[in-house]
Length: 231
Image (cartoon, rainbow, N blue to C red; front, side, top):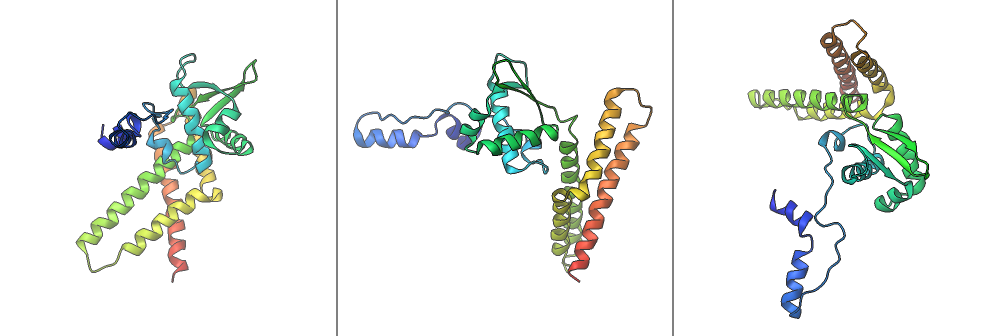
């Protein structure tokens, strides 16, 4: 583990304690309730394009509870919305809204137990069209930007930087506007259902390729429109 991470996790206030001791001649007490603990947040979640900042904050909190709870199976936690509110500093209505949205997008499942506390299950990525689509957008953008970088090296006199910027803008517009990505979410969700029900007879590789190609075509069309706006 890198030193700065070890310090943040295990010895967050070491400098204060050491400097305070050397100046005062006695060891000083600095409360640190969360030293030695941390939550593993996968990049596939942290960088998911289809999660708002508040949704991520609530999901991180649920992942934290699920990863430290021993009384329930993996991915399950039991926590009140008030606890989530206190730990995230978000308003209760914001927490409720984020939980509803996370459920709708398939990141979590929710039930209410006999003691009125909510039970949450953190869903996997394989059944979530939003995670899959986000990863496909990341992949296509990375591939295209790398291609432009190679062209820039081969032909340094041509300015490809504007094209790269507009393409990034196009991918983010695809993510931001539901009218662009809604159809892809439906297509991926239908494909997931086909794969998991085991009853459909189709070439899954071809189906996935078609879905991915349609996403690329949509982003390319947005990119072309972005180009037209600056001409």
